[in-house]
Image 1 (cartoon, rainbow, N blue to C red):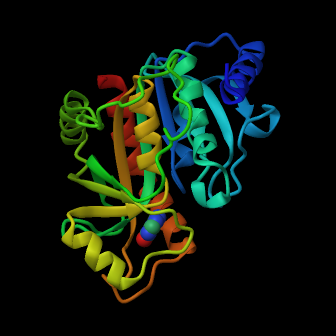
Image 2 (image 1 turned 120 degrees about the horizontal axis):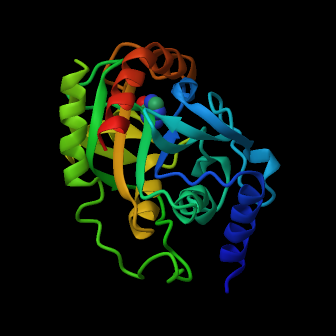
Length: 272
Ligand code: HPA
């Protein structure tokens, strides 16, 4: 068995030593969106730094811990903060937490992020339901295939699950939160894009740009998760507004959108 799989199993064992809570829904809370975890009736909190072998996030706006518990009676595990490729981790390590949550028993995954808006429907504080993606960073599936987790050549045809997307749209309508649909494009970061890059991405159909979610969705589908992706548009992408993107704006707008984001996510969780 590969060293990598041994490492995942070691992390899994350390979590199991602390809690026997078995989640059904996994949740990754993006930059500035971590406060949603306050909605969880907490069964256990595990900081990443207390799990030997776990990649620890250094990004701002990311608390860096698992919160396990229930929301509307649904059993969830939330990642308050994620790791990014730009932090210098191997791409396989970036997606290790996703695989871990699948091995813990979760079968549905909700990925959230703060992203730069490219779509004409976007504005800071709006939400995009991801219906497909363009991944401009290396595949997290490169290297030995962990056949115990998934197949060598998984299809990405239904990467953001069609049936779950319908539920997200009806949930959004029921709580009066506006959502548009679009394609998420992932760059490596950490630099924001140039205006020329954004023009190119727009011409290729991207609706929002960010630095996290596509690789997680790939690893998740490989591992058998049904995936939902939601971007909180924290700023207009570079060249599309008078002010260039900044970390302060990303965190401020994402946390201001927190009330709508919470309403939306709670409705989705109770309906899936
Ligand atoms: N570009 C890339 N990633 C981002 C952005 C952006 O404009 N905003 C938030 N994350």
